[in-house]
Length: 440
Ligand code: ASP
Image 1 (spheres, rainbow, N blue to C red):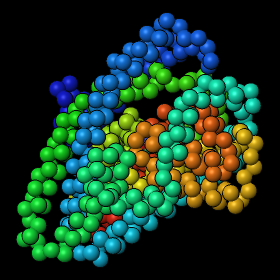
Image 2 (image 1 turned 90 degrees about the vertical axis):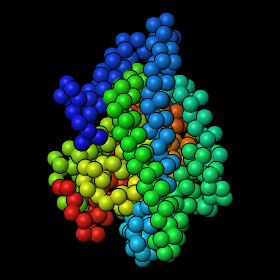
Image 3 (image 1 turned 60 degrees about the vertical axis):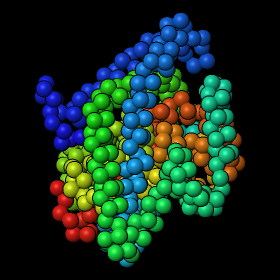
Image 4 (image 1 turned 180 degrees about the horizontal axis):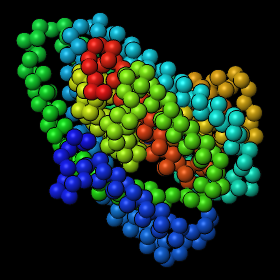
């Protein structure tokens, strides 16, 4: 983390991670430009070798880093949430903190969707894609799109998703990556119960969980020492296999989505941090360097969640009980970048399909994009299956998803940044409201 001691060569960990990112990206992009076949073209021998190395050697190392981050997620979610809730001391306080947190999630997510829809309506990137180009890209990425559609078909209805928040088997929920909400619910309920019991009855359990939490944070510190290498591997793999040809073909969409995300992060999130937490932009981004690079390289709010907690507590002085409450919920439910991306992508694909959406349908899209952003798993590409579901619901063929898949990795990496920084600012706001002095 930022506060990690400088290495013998004098470089701080965030700087090393950033160098890892630049190094991985530079090599990945260079090899991509040199060897990637044109869209629909034959793969050369060099490209096949490169793909083999990227998939068979570099990716497993990147995945190892990701797995090490994921490894501490379940114990951190459970211990931090339980201790967070139990530490609040009263059920009323839990209610007001929970209410404000959900309000933050809902308002910022809706604002992000509206910004996405506004941009895509004004810029109309769908009009820039001719039917021939659309067919060409679709042919290339159809298989991938169909896999997402199938995953989406297995997604439960909205009501069932709500019902599933309550786990029948909490061990099963913890073991299933897609069911973090079940674990969260259990930890919340136990924490609330602990508030009601005499402190003496839960003292041992709290000490045990505090120990587990501290251990996981220590392990996370070790894992982050490997981040410069892990990040380099992840970025190399992502950039070497980026569809640069497709990026040009759907360039207006790509720029709309990326521009919207960058604007949301740099303007909206920065302003929120200033207005609601009193943190100046320079200070905010200095404290967030490692967080941003981790979110960007892992493309996963869940994998980044332990780092988000550490950033809030160590860098900005948010009390553990608030960070421990907000971050697990936020990593699962609050995805501003994903919401913006959904708004842009749904309307873009409707434009390509030549479907003019009525105002009522657009309002429905806002609602569905918000729900989808809440329901999407905080893993790479977690929102894509649900995006396929929404497309089908507004009568746009979900196979058109193929048009955006070639560039989605980069968009995914970028949208994960506001996904996590919005959680961070929410915790800063709540801590300040509770009268805590932040490290501004
Ligand atoms: N990768 C995003 C996240 O983990 C989810 C998504 O938009 O696909 O936050």
